Length: 306
Image (cartoon, rainbow, N blue to C red; front, side, top):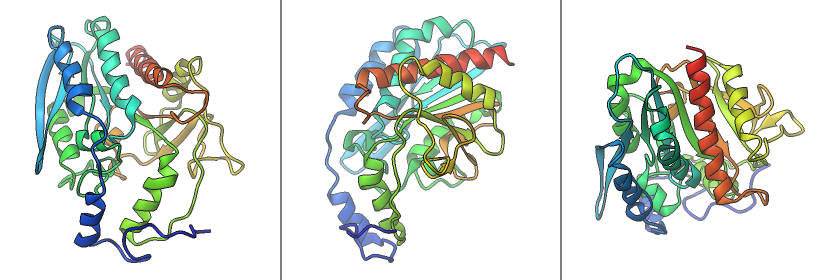
């Protein structure tokens, strides 16, 4: 079954060209501030942690420094863990959960791991509450050589020197109702495909790696977040967001093959969180707390299974 109402930009069945992308871009409106919500928080953390600009995005009138935070005094004998948020800028708790982890637990873990946090990979999209960058490119399908997304290329360059040392990588995401109301229809229109409506999972779930699954790791993270939020059940077909459930609250994607952020290293412990902020049982505070709990559980597991 396909949607009865075509997406308002483009011709059904015809991929977008420059004209359609320009029309789409003209409709994107800045709704919040990267400076206020992210940069100011990062600046406040700089007295306790190492802060660096790892890249710069130049989108005409919009200029964005890309910020990373590191535990201070890295030690060669300690393992490295990577925390990323805001790869999809509209997924709010990924950004604020990453920052909150640093605020609340950064010092606590600094003598056990070298941690690196990129809290808002896609600041243009964060401000516009969108999934794509201004070129209508999804950064979370762009973690590959010759990346078409500056956001992804900059993060890969940051991680490159430590790529083979990363023990754990957790990428913080959300699945929202707007995935079905806006972003999936826009994707189909952009690519000249028919939009096939789906359903949004009601609750938290994780994305494991098809090629290198780590089921015990995934279940440990799920157990840590369940006291805070509910776990998404599989639908009547045994699927979550159109993918077969590998276990309760877990699906699997070929992370590297799809160019996903969580596949950018060969870390033995890696996952993508998917918080459901539109649930009537979830608040922004709970969503942020869930992300923090997931990060802490992921690090603890990785340290215990080296």
